[in-house]
Length: 364
Length: 175
Image (tube, rainbow over all chains, first blue to last red; front, side, top):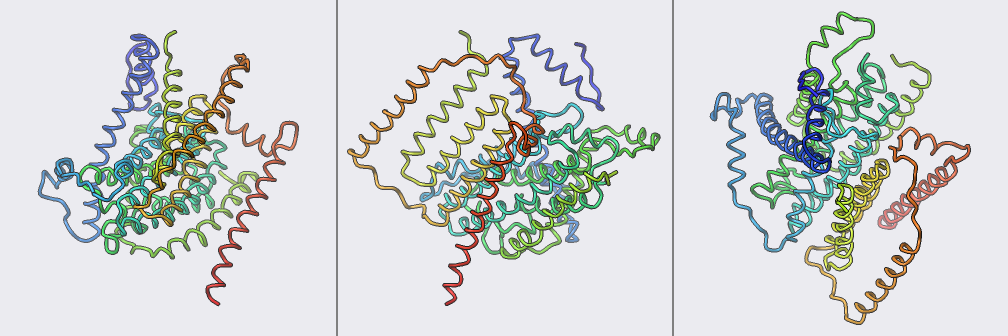
């Protein structure tokens, strides 16, 4: 198969890699090499995206607070996060004498591996999709439900009151908000008629689901945005690490690269939920198409899918950062009231509303 | 016989399951036991993935790894301190339980070895989410609507009883 590369469709490019690998070596080794390549690609992607997101967060935070933000290292402080990374890598790892050492060491890895597992199912562009499961949405929900274990273990094994309180808070928070995240995604699954992410994206060829499903889709998106902000432990729901009350919550005792894992996992989870929102509600890599407007659709097709995907994801991440720097932190009882008394009932009614709209054919 | 990727993965997963199952029951710290149990459950999900039954694997991850283990860890966090350790077991108990587990193992292995497993000719296929959903709610032949409804009634009863128990304690305290 000849080499071909197009920024509009990666299918032929990835197939070319696949075919040439299988032609060059036995299937077993070809599979191993493919797995290694995908792993390296994701690792590199993680590192670069993490660096960029930390920089973006600091700049946006500064902008919201009428400051300049990082501005000394490199042009506009762009190399600041690389300097931070080097600092984190060089820092001493502090071992706590009375901690449970095995669990203390395992916890950061659980958190980061979970976000790795989930990101594998995200379609980045046409043909850029590591695993296309039949149960895509369900798989992501299943995998990301394990992330809380890392936080709980970190809090308990540090043998520190602040850490333990932080872990308990985050446990209660994540377990309850998972329901809303799941139900709001199910609302769209009802509309899409499939859980496979590639089918969901393909189903938005004529119009994105948020416009197709109008009222229930918009409600589901707002609920998803609130609940997923809570699930990633970000402000205004960052009770697990509320620095004014708990020092740093569940990762108080962590230092150096282990702390960096938690830090990176937070940003990766934010990217993850933003990309899920972009894929499920806003069409993923699918350009904005409106049924009937052929000329308009052609103009939109000129923008490569990968730019659509990252544009949407970064826009949603920007909204989440906006949340963090403008809303005050909730109290734990307010947090649980919001979920169990407001979001969950709204969500349950919303799923029924969506089912009604799909059955009656009232969507676009 | 050459090792295929599938066999290699199976050996890795089953090795992890056996190793961590043993560690789960032999460790003297309760939260470590819960964590090892988590690894056992995740590797079981891995075997389901290997068999191309992704739905069951995801169920395994959500219900067992993400649900039950989180609940277990949560209750351990509420009730036990990091310095707590179980007493080492006496040698009498150790020998007796070892005998019991070896006997159980012998029974299982002999049954498995004596049963003739015939290779299924059907082509391995991905089980579609659609099919699962429809057969769960189907009341025709091979439909599962009755067990589905019975389980949902059971869950409802469990939830109501949980609320009742939680409420009772509160009113007693106020008195």
